[in-house]
Amino acid sequence: MIYALSGLLLGIIAGFLTPIKIPSVYSGYVSIALLAAFDSVFGGIRAILEEKFDNIVFITGFFSNTLIAGLLAYLGDRLGVPLYLAAVFAFGARLFQNLAIIRRQLIAKHIKGK
Image 1 (spheres, rainbow, N blue to C red):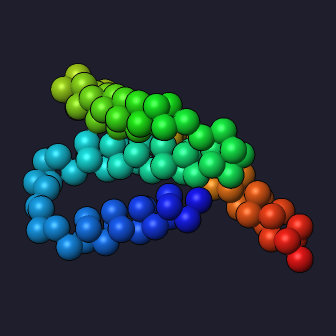
Image 2: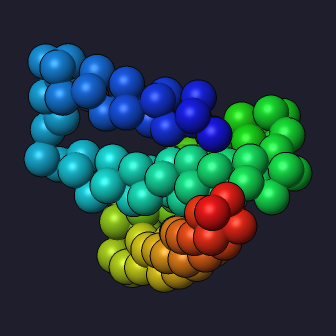
């Protein structure tokens, strides 16, 4: 788990230090894609804690969820329908569910470790 957290931290630091500017036109697509990516990352951390982690499942899920969420937002924008809300609801709910499970597992490990 330390590798996952250190990789996440390094990725956040690299993102802040990289001078890439995203045009405001694409900010909605990028935000939905980031939500999907965070959902995959926290799902991976949960899988590590449950000792069910699989690299192939994580990598394919990460890229397919991110791509589908971005495309869904783009398609909805072109059609004039807020399809991005489906991605926000689905990935947001799973993100908070994964965070709750991770928190419970860490607390249980901490209590058992004493």
